[in-house]
Length: 230
Image (cartoon, rainbow, N blue to C red; front, top):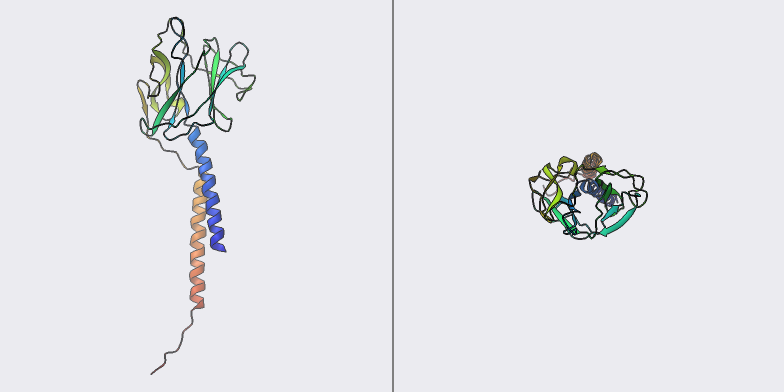
């Protein structure tokens, strides 16, 4: 009975550790690159997501917001699995038709639980009035594309790190579905949350106590029998 109880407790604990680690994992996903404006008719419009290899983007979304009124004007349902392109990280790009050219438009990255993972603005900042980012202010990246931009370029993150804020924004040659120019990912290490380590330690103490108790009971149950046949 006690053994089954221990197994149930451990299984439940492992589940919650995985759940907490998933939340940590999600924080490592971010908008890595996008292109929305260029010379002539806009072409090659896309948004790229970067994050840990193996991440399944099923049920994630990109929500696009209008700087004129703060309302969402387009949503893109994501799919696919991020491959390992560098130190346990990779990227996936999604073609987006008719991304607005500003001013003060924004893009929100939404996870499968409808949480806003990132909310970036370009050509200014806006306050979202509906959708998953309602009530949130977008963070202006301070880089813009114009009607003079080349179709082959994009606004992209460069530098070294493992999370979005580790990198800086820059305009460079677009690299959809690939690591950006001058972008270097540090080796991925998703930590077990503090609560997880506490649980693991408690399990170790509990299992050690149970084993010592079994040993005592076994010794107490032993009886000495007299030798016969002498």
